[in-house]
Image (tube, rainbow, N blue to C red; front, side):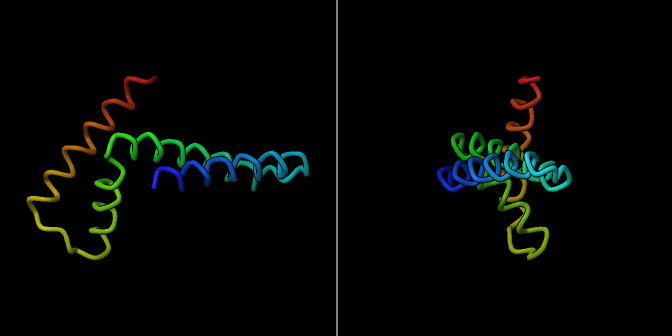
Length: 88
């Protein structure tokens, strides 16, 4: 999963650069945002936390995760958020 997010980050950065040169600022903006999100996912995957956040996201739509697992994954995601907040 980490490798996929890293590839997507590189693709979005390359796409954004081309779009910026073409003057398509709207699409370039979205690609740069996407690249940033993919890098956050790389970091989270390295720390074993992205899967948990994604699991919670999927549960919102599918309601398939048991309550105890939601609580456990929530704690891991909160830990990731705290670490990201210290990067500022």
